[in-house]
Amino acid sequence: MNIVKSLSLTSSALRWLPVLIASLVIALSHASVAHAQDQARGQIPARTELHTFQSVTISDADFLKGEGQATPVTLAGELRVAQGTGRMPVVILVHGSSGIGSNTDVWARQFNQMGVSAFILDSFTGRGLTVVGPDQSQLGRLNLSLDAYRALEVLASHPRVDPKRIVLMGFSRGGQATLYASEKRFLKAWNRSGLEFAAYLPFYPDCHTVYQNDTDVVDRPIRIFHGTGDDYNPMPPCQAFVERLRSAGHNVELIDYPGAQHSFDSPLGSTTPTVSKNAQTVRNCRIREEPVGQLINAVSGAPFTYADPCVQRDPHVGYDPVAADAAHRTIGEFLKQLFELK
Image 1 (spheres, rainbow, N blue to C red):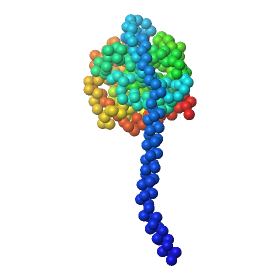
Image 2: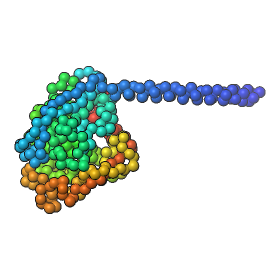
Image 3: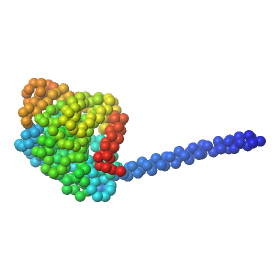
Image 4: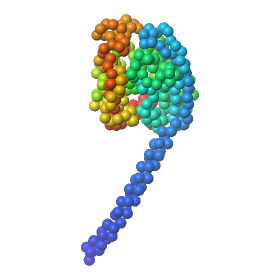
């Protein structure tokens, strides 16, 4: 009799099991939706400000010499102030050869979610440019480093910015600008803000140029993010530079992602490597500053130009969701520690 009763209860319970499972699924779904809504809400800036500021357009040669002919230009940046009160940390985002891309918005949203403001620098519009990939000679590469220093001036006096917690982060051409903005020589010549960046976070930069005394960088963390599959700005020259910086005692790391292509964090890119049609790459060039202010082709010994035979075209780009997710986690953890966030 007890066995029969037990079986009967079990059968009764089994009849309700689908209902219980459905209720659990609905509850989990509601919790997931609520979590997603909280995340989306956290990514909304408390306010968005557009700031214009003065910079100059200058040749790389004159930038390297610390003086020369410079054309004044008015640039702009978008400051997305994170939710919160008081002075907050900021990440300055420096775009690449195609201008501000989809990855910039994704990074800014992550930072705002963390309670970190984002300053999206536009180095092209004020100069009448939209893209320079097919003709890199349109703008000296070091202009973007100079623009970053000018953006630092803007943020230095902003009432919602903690001047001791401003990080520079850039992508491709902007990654190169970010990396070399750490040079003491360049900071001394061009940084008028009275501040230093708290860290430098270049993504897939071009490291093919060796500047005079380029291991004399500031004592701040440098973290380079690169894909091993990058044929636009190949990673090996960056590895060599990192080794030289480490030998000089600097706090620098190269985080690599196996197989990842150039622009691996750009979510609107194809997951299949795609040709960046007609874009110039110096992947086969060796460029050296010699003497000060003169960039030469280290193979020929002649002044470097984008007409040199070593300059090629049609490198690849591609989105890598695995590498992108890993980079977002690494950057998030790094900034939490650096900015002492909860």
